[in-house]
Image 1: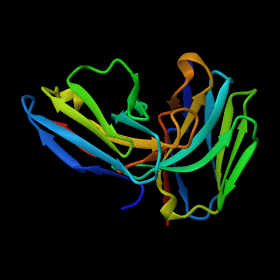
Image 2: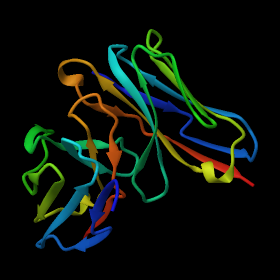
Image 3: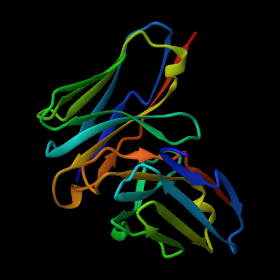
Length: 113
Length: 114
């Protein structure tokens, strides 16, 4: 595998479910990001991890919980989501946290029913 | 607060045309600017990154220019092909304080017709 991978690619979950999104980067980067992409809105940065430490949390509801066990892996744990959370969730990585070119995964299309 | 605007929102052209996509930003104090491509329902692919000290970058049929003082960037696509059909996103890195992150435009949806 090369680049940034995300699993699953599609996820349908009920509002009471708990699920996790996984991201893995094979680029040797030190920073990883979660973005939310909704129709008619700019990409929203959710979380940033640099060297496995969270450095940015953009007022994201607590029903989204990130985890970065090492510099290659990033998770987004989901619980008690709302229908408005349905979106494309994108993971990205870069060599360092700020100002560097970002490389994106294919995304997870999440539908909350 | 930095804002990024992309015009037009959508564009449809016949194959072979040269075309220009526009991106404007409100705060000229940027670190760099990136252009991305997104195919429907998929992730983003980085096309070009222009540092604030640069005026342009080229990759194949793509040329991106940057005019920091006027807060504008353009992405020029030469001899467009149907495979260029996608959404093109512009994003700027601020260089201080609350702007120290990528700020995104909404994108230009491009359709190149055979």
